[in-house]
Image 1 (cartoon, rainbow, N blue to C red):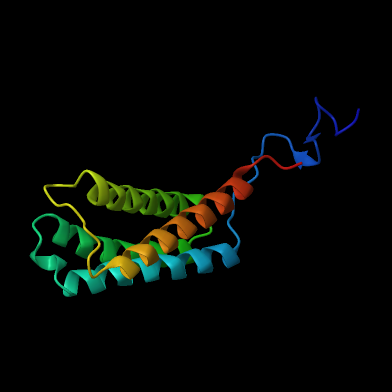
Image 2: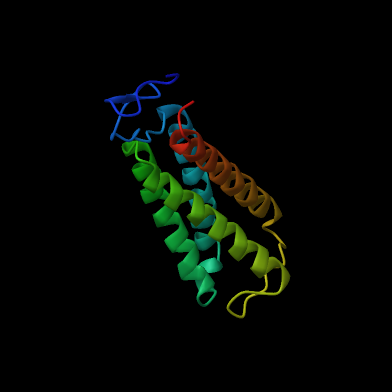
Length: 146
């Protein structure tokens, strides 16, 4: 039979009954962690520059900074896909929050971008890049072996 024995111990070159463990390589994890840290730094910078005075949004900026740092540590420390998935979803949530605040408003706050245009562009870019890198790394790690 091509691919191994179905009734035996080998199927498609792998032990029957064993699952391939998804492990993310270190390269994308380090790059994504660096992007998470940059995004967290942008939120901390904006928090300290005045967003701390904005109800609800200010504490969310501080939470983003802290969670970005923790996410970066988790993504680098673990080869398991779960931290990468959580970090990618977190980054997509940050992008969604910024998109809402910039268009229809969020928690009574409407982002005008005045004085923070570069920071907004950096936040969008690093959050999107981190989410894409993490998503691709997870996809490649969990896809069935060929």
